[in-house]
Length: 204
Ligand SMILES: Nc1nc2c(c(=O)[nH]1)N[C@H]1C(S)=C(S)[C@@H](COP(=O)(O)O)O[C@H]1N2
Ligand SMILES: [Mo]
Image 1 (spheres, helix red, strand yellow):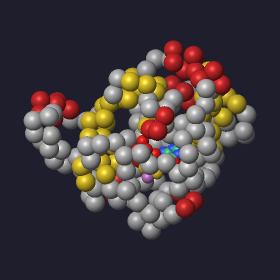
Image 2 (cartoon, helix red, strand yellow):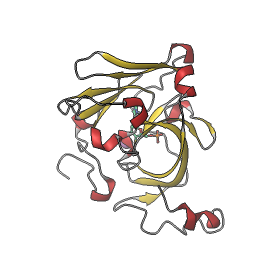
Image 3 (cartoon, rainbow, N blue to C red):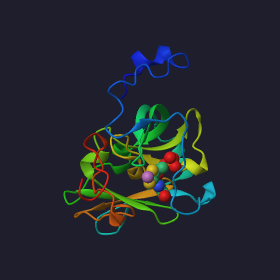
Image 4 (cartoon, helix red, strand yellow):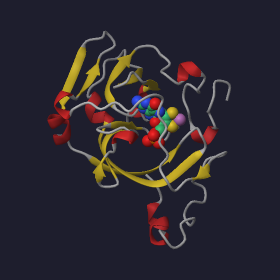
């Protein structure tokens, strides 16, 4: 996903090398990993965790327990992430299940998804933004189980869009025929959120 080939050799020595052209307009390079959460961090025991895919009619199409989800084929993802609060972090490393594999074969009517989470957070995405190898449900960050403050046990990862679309503590995806703005989208954030177009707020 990223041009890690060029930047890798410079880690530690010249950390800015390789960042050219990778920081979207209005963003700055962040080396830490800030935590941004509206509300408390939910903590659900793994034996009560599941991940569900729900159809446009509200019916459950698929469900995985933690054990089943953990056993699904995972991919390594190295990507840059961009937060609407203006920080970007390069070459973050994750492991996750491609959303393509979780959604499976889609009904004609499914044109959008709403990610739903423990704690009640939601975010909406057009189906094309999460299919075709562009999104994962991740449970490993930098080789370790994803920390709770960053969305563990599992979070959606959609690196091409601002990070509010990467829902933490995600518990499922609901297919939808029409678009339904999520938590931040109803509060003034842009409906799509492309960092390269600076789609931060409603009128951008
Ligand atoms: N469930 C949930 N997911 C969420 C949020 C949240 O409040 N709840 N905040 C979003 C926002 S606004 C951002 S910028 C990123 C921050 O991710 P981080 O805390 O791992 O940096 O998570 C996104 N995912
Ligand atoms: Mo955010």
